[in-house]
Structure formats: structure tokens, C-alpha cells
Image (tube, rainbow, N blue to C red; front, side, top):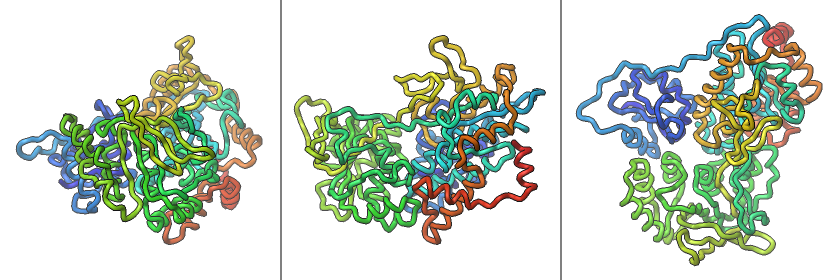
Length: 560
């Protein structure tokens, strides 16, 4: 098998279109692409050209001979996606169908101008899709002084390969027609109506920043919180850098077993010397060095076959950490494995069946997966001392897990966007293919669009936002071409003046480059970067950005 896709696959599909023999699936036009845990290379059809390696934005593809021992399971995992066939399948020489770029029909009133609110993957992919067309202008607004959303503040620090996608985002931001306005909050500093006065359309790609909350007694006590907050804390998000995190107890309980829970458990049990070579926040590294945590229990309401984590993440976890099950859960795994027919589920269960026994002495901090535990209440007087669970399916069997820290990890939830309708049940902005829709009249809200999690809910992976954003942009451009988007009433130069008047501390692309360079420089030779975790420090670094020469400022003004 010449090439293999590994754990850090972001599913953006760039490799699909680079492959000359169409041997990477599922493709964006195939059923299941949006929910696939990763993409897979057909070992029989791959011609070893390496085009996919160059196209992958996160370095997830390698020649089979270059895989580490921990990556070896991905050889079988890629092959298992494809049916067994007799003999070698010849190259097809058929290219995967590349979606057409949205063709903008120029108008005499000036170029298509779009405001994008948010700067995470959905926002950057939307900007890239728009800028395929000559003359289009995109202004990106982000409330933090740093861009790229969950890639910066959500991806675990020991997954540096996944963070490589920011190199692609940097290239997008360098394109002609792209303008960055950081440290500007739409809805507070600028209104939706003001953005529409300066743009043909406003596209919101603001994600799903809130947690789904677990409504049981005791949540809210000191020593309780959410995995999302904890992730933001160890990633240096400025709004969570002072989160009170107490690691002075031997056990942490995580309720929920998705990929975020696995990330948190892995960070809590990884040798701090290993983490010291990542971009983890300094305050988190110091706390982990002093940590007394010896066990992290990941508790799931349902059984092993319904595990929410993905197979690639389970493979990576089992290869890097001590992961165990108690005897009763090993029995549950065996029962589910005997009944499983779905190949993906069987693969997960086979890996779970090979995990160690929780009864064996622990030689280092470990992770224990626990199943069929329905949380009943957090116990404790002044702070959390543990969690009481009911065994799922039983009305009266109670199990208690002592713990000094209890974190819930049961998903993300979108929050209302000012001046747009909101579906509180689904926690998304009501939309039709990215066009915001007024549910009371079932009609589009003029000039208003969404992409990413605020459009479809918190599903998929980083790269899933590429096809999601492309759909929205195609519909936006179609509306523009059909004359449904009104020309801006204010001149382009007026926007920059308005932003700088309202937000004197606005950070532009040069300021972000200065922050980026300063963080990388602080990392030295041993770390990719040492993040600033306070807005004041970010702004101070941005202020050190050199003033561009006159000719560059003139060109920038022309581009705007």
C-alpha cells in the first residue's frame, strides 16, 4: 500500500481532487462524506504519485514505509474501507469531480463585497471560495485579537500536525481582496445593519461557542466545569486563562466520551515534559507539572458499541496512553463485539477488547473508559467530591466515583446571533443552504448567510467546513447574480474609518503577523510557540508591527 491517511485527517477533501486516479473516498459528492470520521486511500488503486501528500493541509498522509509504529493500524484501517477484490485493481485515470467555482457576474456598482463574521475554518474556507473570483472583496471580523477559532483554541496542543491547517489559512489571508479586522465584535462594536451598509452580504461563521449543560444536582459546585472550558484553559484562550483548575486530587471524572473528552483525558495523563514541547499555555503546563491526578475516568451513558469518539482518535489514544477497562466493561465489549455487524463499530470494539485490565497496578497516570453510567448527581458539600451514577437500564443500582474534578463533555451549542432569527431547539440560525430564513414567513433574510456549526450544528471535522462553506458561497453568489443583493450605500474607505473610530485597538493582518512572530520567537528552539494569554499582551505585540512602506499602503488602499 503506497500511501496512507492517518489520525490527523481533517477531511477537507483537498487530497481527493489532487488524486489523479480517484482512489480517495468518500469524496465530497458522495453520501456519508459529511459524517465520515476520516478519508481513506484505496490500497489497490493508489499509484504512489504523492500528489495527495502535497495537497493535504495537515500532513496526515504518508508513504506506508514512513509510518511510525503507532500509525501502523491505519494501513489496515484505510484498506478496510474498500471491499475485497480479486487481483489488483488498475488505476482508473478518472479524476474526482471538482465542484465549479461560483462565477460572479460583474455589476457596474462595484465588486461583490462580503463581510464574514468569525475567523475559524468555516470563515476561512468561505473567504477562499469567494476569492476564487477576480475583484471580490472579503472583510473578516473576529472579536479576539487572534484568528482561526477552534484551530487555535480547540485543537489539543499535542496535535500539532492538525494545526498545520493554519498555514493554508495564512495563504488565504494573503490573497488580494482579503482584509482582516481582529479585536472587533460584531453585535457590540458594529451592528448587522452597519455591515450591510458597507457590504452586499454578511456571512456569519461564528461556530457553536457554548456547551450543552448537564442538568443534575451539584453541577456548579467548585470542582465542576465543562471540557470545553478546560480545553480553552490549556490552549491559552484569554477568556479562560484564569479558570480555577484544581488538579490536587487523584481522580478526574469526565462525563461523555466524544473526541473532546479523549483530548482532555490525554492531556491530563501525558508526561508534562512531552507537553513542554507543544504550544500548551504556560499556566496549564505549570499546573500539570504539579498535578496529583492518577486516573481519569471517561464515563458514558450508553454501551461500548455506541462510543461517541472516532476510531482514529481511539487508535491514537491507545497508542500513546495507558487506557484500561474494568472487568464488567470488558464483558460489555465482548457482548457488543459478538453482535456488531457494522465494520467501523467492529473495529472500535476490537481495539477496546485489547485494552488493559483496570485491576492491574497502575505504573503512571491512566485513563479508564467506563460504560452504561447515567449521571445522577455530583456529591459534595462545599466542592465536588465525586459523582453518583445510576447503572443505565437499572432503576436502583447506584455507583459512586470519587473525584476532585468533574467535567462534562456532552457537546457544543450555538448561541443567538444579534439581529438574526434563531432556532433555540436546534441551536442554529434557521437557513436554507446557508441562506438565513425568517421562520415566521419562511423567506430569506436579505443579505444574511451562515456557514459552519451555526449553520448545521456541531458536526463534522475541520475540513467538513470546506464543503459547507462552498454551498453557502454558491448560494450567495447566485443571489448576487440574480440582483437580490443590494449594493452597499457607503464607500469602501468609510468602513475602515468606522472600524478604527469604534475600535481604536483593532488588529489588522500586520498586527496578527506581529503577534504570531512574537509567539513563535518566545517558543525558542523547543516549542512551536508560547502563546500570549492576555489581550493586553497581544495588543502590545501587535503594536510592534512595522509600518508598511508608502507604496504598500497605497496598494492596500486600492485593494480595499
